[in-house]
Amino acid sequence: MAFLDIRKLSKSYGSTVALNSVDLSVEAGEFVTLLGPSGSGKTTLLMAIAGFTRPDDGGIVIDGVDVTNVDPEDRDFGVVFQGYALFPHLTVADNIAFPLKVRKWAKADISAKVEEMLSLVGLDKLAGRKPRELSGGQQQRVALARALSFGPRILLLDEPLSALDRSLRDIMQRELKRLHKETGVTFIFVTHDQEEAYAMSDRIAVFHNGRIVQVGAPREIYQKPASLFVAGFLGGNNIVTARYLPAERTLQIFGDCLAVPAQFDPAQHGDGEITLWVRPEDLHFCEPGGDRYTFPVIVMDISFTGSSERLVVGTADGQELTILAPSASVTTFAIGQRLHCGFSPSSIGFLPRD
Image 1: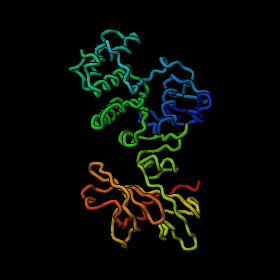
Image 2: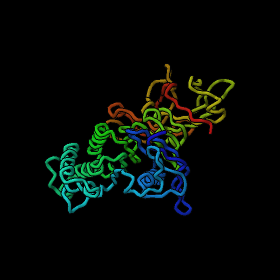
Image 3: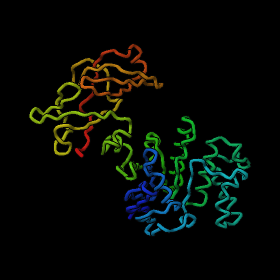
Image 4: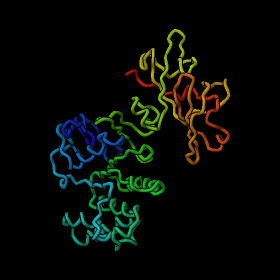
């Protein structure tokens, strides 16, 4: 049995289904991210695990004990909210000490633990400051220290990085990974940011319409999306329609016929009209021929994104593709320009027929 076992959990608000028979198992010490768009059910599941939301059906089992109807304060979980929820009138040290005082720890033990947590999150010299005197990243460190101070079995994090700027978010991602490794606590993290999920997680559970539609390691989910939704949501893949011609063993695509790649399985992916995906970074401008699939395109839009440029091109059969190219390589391109685009047959991903 897994350390955290969520069984057929369901929750509705009137006619709106927030969770639809969700199953999820988490091992002790894992960093699991609940990833999905707004309204997909990920925060509802987190709040149900914390005990703030009671499910309509199903159960939550921790280390073999059913805690579905146990009050939040009796679950021994740490929670870090999006807004950190620090006490503005208390110092950093007193914020960290608060859950220990509620649990009636001895003064000496509280003092020792606060010192330990301040050192863990690198705030030793800021113990006497109030939250308003701290930066966003420092406030988040206080919230993390407070949530970890009493040794929770699970740390629940509800989009704690969303209010930070890009550079600070990158720093805090590394901090969270470090804290997870050093404490050994089970982390369950909610986000809608795919890069954030990839950077920190042992496993990712992808949510869509109140269901978990795929669970796996970051690389596995990125390389092998199991559905049209996952393929489109993760990594901004180009979703493409084609037609499989079994007699010729070819794909009719982009106004041309291409030989079927080795990874295509008619039994799994279907015949007739099929759906496939290609990542923007796997598409390149090139001359016709060689060992790539090549086809003509017309440049429809160019957007500078920093180290790369995002180009939208149109194909002969009316489909649109997004291409990511190094900025230096597209300085001479222009909207309306006709070029050839290509990709390796091995870079195509095919979605199941259903």
